[in-house]
Amino acid sequence: MPTFWSAAAGKLVERWLAAGLAAAVYWLVMLLAWAGGQPHPRQALADRLDAVGTMHPGEQITLLLVALIALAGSGALMRQLTLPALRLVEGYWPGFLSGVSGWLRQRHTTRRAADAAAWRPLQTRLEGGPAAAGQPPLSARERADHARLEARLRWSPRDPALAMPTRVGNILRSAEAEPQHKYGLDAVILWPHLWTLLPEILQRDLAVARNRLDATVAAGLWAVLVLPAVYWTPWALSALLFVLGAWGWWLPRACLDYAVLLQVAFDLHRQQLYRVLRHPLPATAADEPLAGLRLTAHVYRGSDDPTLVFDPGT
Image (cartoon, rainbow, N blue to C red):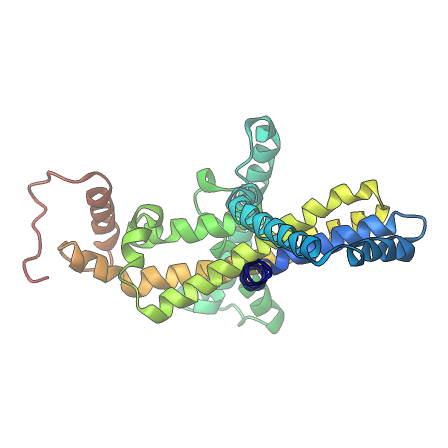
């Protein structure tokens, strides 16, 4: 029996090292928060360690197994909560928050219109041509303003109806909407099909970027779950700073990395969708949005359009 328990514990330790480190950090923080709320923190921790030390070896192994199972279980639960948490951070909120959501969406739309109005004359001067005749070239300050405005416009939905109440939501919504704006391709519908056609290196980069995005969401969620420890010590409120850092600073950057790669996938490999589905490639850039809409509709619900002739050469 001791050999069995040792082997079982060893396997669980391996699994914990692979997937339970974040959960271990969380429970360690909670333990320290509990100790911080005791009159004599060091003595309280020492007493608990002494109690474990006086147990029989079998009891200690059982306690270790329970602890590792709790770590693995909390890690698995966090993986299930990551997507709903991301949806909330994006701005998919319940109905009773519709007033706040609507105000934030309108604020985004107003700000985007102001950014576009400020960007347009700078872009005209940067491009030159007859419209910029007689105007001085952009100064270093104006170039910096132009770059800042262009980045904000790129990662905010063009259509006010697609605006989201949060920055994270607008970045991801822009990434989803851009293929349809440029090519007529619905990214949500066609992404599973395109993914199977991507080269391995791009699939790997996308997976890494998505894992980083999910890990950042999970880090903020772990910090939120530390807040109940305020029952023991007010220092637990400092977890709010980590939440703000994770979701207000790191998460938008992780979303930008993922969004850029998503757009690269459509920019460079959308033609493969046409080839494998035997749709004729659009002849010109002007033809592409309509061809993309046709391809999307065919994938989504099929087509009985007699004018749609499959390409026999693919």
